[in-house]
Length: 83
Image 1: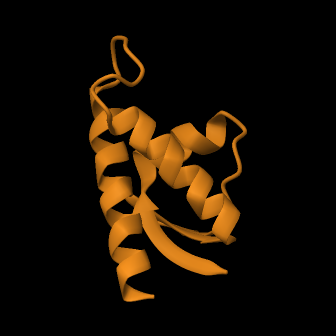
Image 2: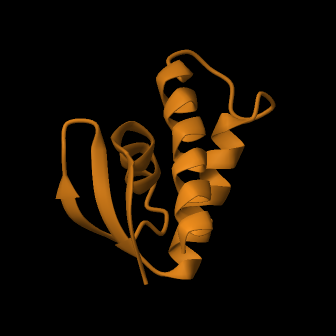
């Protein structure tokens, strides 16, 4: 199991689409502490990479989610390196 702080904007979007998200331990103003399995963390990472990619989803109002997705990918990368 993993406990990781993730950017709130992307996490709420991911969770709102009923994708595997783990369990929220704590919410802060801009981040959320999540407890999740390896599979759930990989799902969040995969989704974040898709949104962060310039060839990912297109549309108005996605700039904030795209920035948050990039930050999510970085947070997961740092978390995995520290493990």
